Length: 485
Image 1 (cartoon, helix red, strand yellow):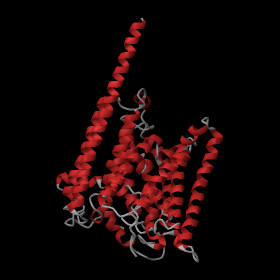
Image 2 (cartoon, helix red, strand yellow):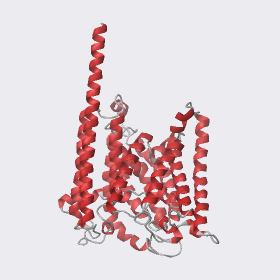
Image 3 (cartoon, rainbow, N blue to C red):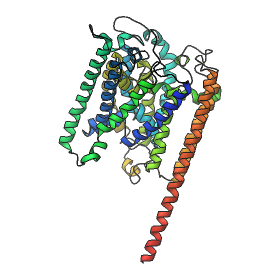
Image 4 (cartoon, helix red, strand yellow):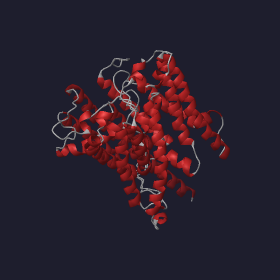
C-alpha cells in the first residue's frame, strides 16, 4: 500500500513551505543555541542542561504529536512510516559514527548550519569535511557494505526501509494501530520528558532560576522545545503522502559536494560513472531549501540582533588544530549519517517522532557515540593545545574583528552561493540518473536564485541600517560630551 496524500498542492509549494520553515527555524535555533554538541559539552563539562532539556522536550512533544494525529485519524498511519529508513546493524553502527563525528566537528546537523550562518569558521570547515566524507562514502563504502541490499532486506534483525514493522504501534498485538499510536506516543513522550525532568531537577538544585511570571515561561527551555516541536509536527502533516514527512538535513547537505564540482563538469550522480549513492537521489529537493534557509535565517536574524561575528575556534586547541579536528569530524559525520540513513535530525529527532524502531536504535548509537566523541575531542584538543592560545584569543571574544565590512562581505558571498546553487542544480539535473521534471527543476532553480538575491539584499540593508545608526549614536555622544565640557 502506498502513502496517502493528505494535502494536495503543486510541488513548488513544498519548496516555499520548507524555505520559510527553515528561515524561521534557523533564526530561532541561533537565538536558543539549539545544538546537541553544545548541549553535550555543557552537560558533561559543567553540568548545565538547559539546551539538552530543550532538545529533549522538542523530541518528546513531537513524538506525542505525531502519535495523537495518527490516533485521531488526522494523518493516515501509513504516512507515519512510509518514508522512514529501516533499522539494523547499519543503523547502530552509523549512528555511533555520526555521534562520534559530530563531537569532533563541533556541531550537530542543526548546529552546523546555524553556526555557519552566524559566523563560526570551524563549522564552515566541518561542512567542507562533510562534503568530502559524502564522496568517500558514496563510492567505496556504499558498495563495499552493500547497503543498497541491507536497506531493502527483510530478514532476522533487519527491518527494511518503509516497512510497517518499523512502526512500533504496529507491533502491539490485539489493538488497532490508531490506539497503538496513542499508547506509544504517550510512552515515548513520558520516557523522553522524564529524562528532561531529571536533568531539570539537578539544574534547579544547582542554580535556581531568578526569573518570574511570563518571562520565566518564555525563556524556559520547555517553551522553546515546544516551539521547535511544531516544526516537526507541521512537516509531518504538510508532507504526508508526498515525501519524507518528518525533517531531514544530511542528504541535502551532502549535495554541497555535487554543487562544488559541477562547475568543473563533474557529475557524481551521473549514470555514466561507477555505481554510487549519488545516483539514488535528485540534485535538489524541498529539504535543500530547508537547510540553506536555516543558514540564511541564522545569518539574517543574528545580524539583526547584533550577534553575527566571524568567530575563529575558541577551544583549548590551537586554531589550526581545532580546524583540523573539525574537518575530520565533518568527514566522519557524513560517513556515519549515510550508513545509518539519518543524523541528529533525520535519525534521532525524526526517528523518535516517527515512533520507530529506527529511532530507538539510532538513539542508542548517537548517545554512545557522542559520549565517546566528547572524550576524544577533549584529548585531541589538549594534544593540539597552544601555549600562546590564551594570548591569541584574548580581547575580542576569540574572534576576528567584527564590522560592517564583514557583514557586507558575508551577505554578498552567501547570497551568490545560493544563486550559484540555483544555476548549477539546473545544469546538473540533466546529468543525474535521478532527474527532476524539467518544469519543476526550472521553478526550483529560479526560486533559489530569487532567494539568494533576497538574502543578499536583506543582509546589506540590515548592515547599512546598523552602521548608520551606530554612526549617528556615536556622533551624538561625541557632540554631547563636547557641549558638556
